Amino acid sequence: MKNILLAVFMFSSLLSCEKKTPETDCGTQECTLEFRAVSINFADNKGDAAEVKNFEVINQRTGEKVYASSAPFSNLMKGSYLIIDDGNRESLSEEGDDLKVTATSAETNQTKSVIVKVAGGKCSCHVSKLSGPELVTFD
Image 1 (cartoon, rainbow, N blue to C red):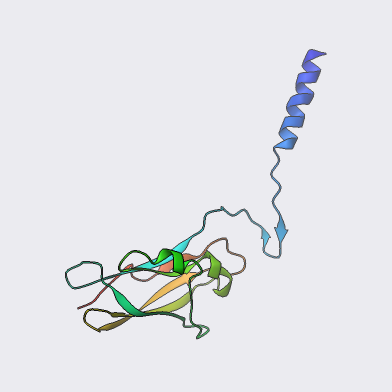
Image 2: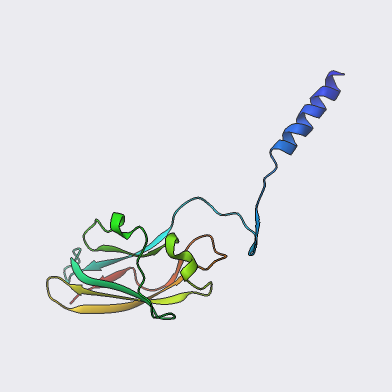
């Protein structure tokens, strides 16, 4: 009798641990709860963090300006700026969009633009950087 009760208890414990994964239009997927972002750094010709002005990100596929949803809370380090984060995930294509990042050095007034390719989409869990620089250096 003791063995039967133990077996029933173990079987019911296994059933209670079963994961329930929601079905969506995208199929079954399990996503982590982390919040991801893609950032870029700007430096002067000495390699020190550079203050920039007129920071702008344009999605080349849509022509729309992109504002990272957490940018007001994250662009606190000199020379480091958020390009995009998971709050913008659905506005991106799954294949990846070219984002044109433009900024002007506050010191020299030199303007630089680079392309950063970032994937997302309705069926993705997070944004992910596919290509592009992590550092832009002003002359």
